Length: 468
Figure 1 (cartoon, rainbow, N blue to C red):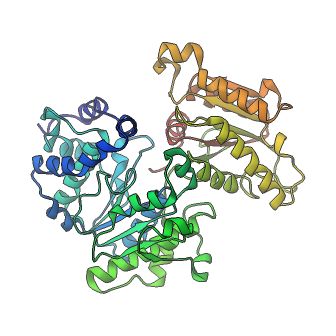
Figure 2: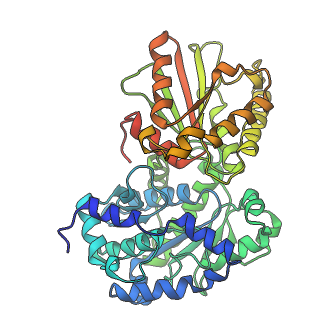
Figure 3: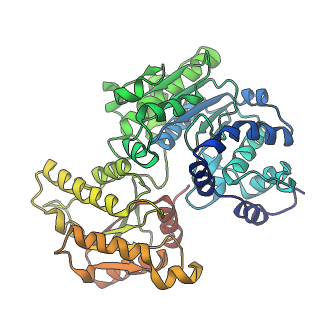
């Protein structure tokens, strides 16, 4: 069984119900299917040889929220590794950028292909008649991997929600935390902030410390927890993750790590360990700057923002001096945005938000530039790496991409039509940027946003060399 390959594991995973399909089922049943999620996960856990109380040995820091939970998890992981370099620390997150094994990390590094396939097939879940869906399967593999490797601590990021999430079967985590609640999730899910906070707060357990950041009052009224805030000391530390919104995530991570250490052995991380942990934190594809290793006139600005609020953070990061904003003393450069959004989301609203926030940022920096001419080229492509992978119907129509192009033209009627590009694949988009690089000596700043799938695809196709 364990001699089966990583490719075999991936093929099996890809045959399972996706997380998107699971969410569609929840919506279609009015949420009734969620009621079975936890009992079913506990049943699957029994199939692989564990009981729920066994998971307490993982020493879990459980993190949920509608934005920033991945970054907070990365900060927390980095702080603990700096404070206790002798420990073995597990980190479980989602989604991945390129390789699924990125979701299961030990001491900051994805587990190897060999270890992934070994732990995957040791569960024997692929032999069960009623196989768990994609996310459930991976969560169970992560539990098995971390228990087998005897980790000292586990940072566990919730997939969706909290109460009914597949990660929420740990009877007693060491500490729990909620990152910022997003108003855009209220609009998409049709729920109030209080309802969302109640579901997120489903990870809280009696007698377990519960932390959160400052939230809208409606969200805070939904449960009881300790609210943490940033401190002057933190503002002086250069964070490893870019964007001013990361200050809140870093503050929560510090409190989560310190609360964990206090509960674990009565210790705390000293100021030097905290500072170094925050500086060393890495979270690929989130407000990340990558210089092209071959086409040296190109800089990639990668951010998988896919909600209205995260797109605002993305624009605040990119439209700033030293990033995408032109300065009088800096070298001239063209600006390109490559954009894609998940099917079913309101692309026009997303583009409108980007346009609006660019204007706000330009005013904030007293820039003489105009929002309508901020980008020189706009690229709308599919999520597929190459056109060979695109279903025939999508390839011939590119309906979503043309809708996005029309929406951009409506936003900015004066934007040159020749500079709005509808392309069938990520490879086509990267090729276009390469053409710019070869055409003249100007620098090209490329913002890639709207989808983590898009960001991961650009990393792979453009062969951007950095450690995941």
